[in-house]
Image (cartoon, rainbow, N blue to C red; front, side):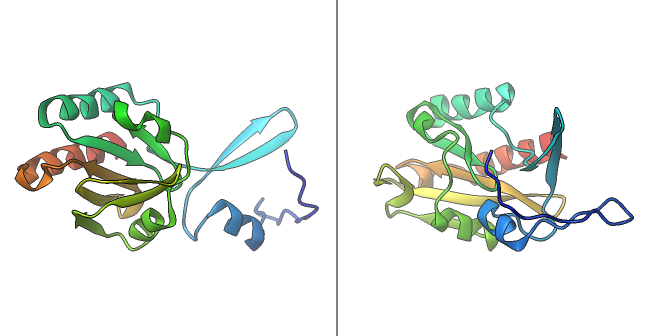
Length: 171
């Protein structure tokens, strides 16, 4: 564990302020949730994400979408790639690119038929893509990224189905 040398007082309500420098490094923005864990005599703070890589049912769903529609699906939380179809397993746990972070911060959706840079291994993805910010209860929780040459031909209800499934699972 890194030592920062920063010391903060606990106020009468039990609050501490996470220094701006640390929030910036960890990309913790105002009103984001932080997970609090205890290990021995240490308090460990982590960025909280409702989207994680342990959801077996969600993994099965994106694998079925790949099998039926030949579309790759990649899910992120606010910082990292969390769930992917088999072709993109190498992304799991890696930090998302600044391009994807900007889409997330602006709560956008993007459809494009140009290569996308995921900033992983200097490889661009040379296929059509559709990226949608996943918003649950007004909060950004991550991105849904669809990749495939046939995205234009796919019924938009497929994209809505996965989004609604995630909304129900994460409420």
